[in-house]
Length: 68
Image 1 (cartoon, rainbow, N blue to C red):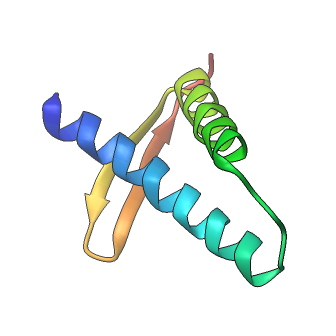
Image 2: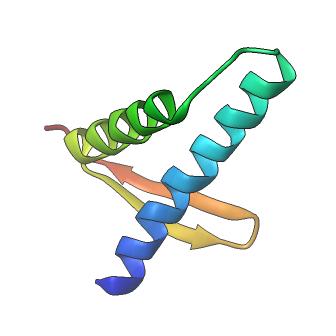
């Protein structure tokens, strides 16, 4: 379970990192509140959809999505 929890958070961390980079490239100002909001939004959406993530060689793959 610990491994899957780390995988879940790694997915969120990578997604937020890419979002921050995209904002930076587009010269969109962001602050810590916006980043926290993005993390919370991703977390809530993934939990609501009951997404199961597993590691893959090139990143993470979504194994299945359950319906809430």
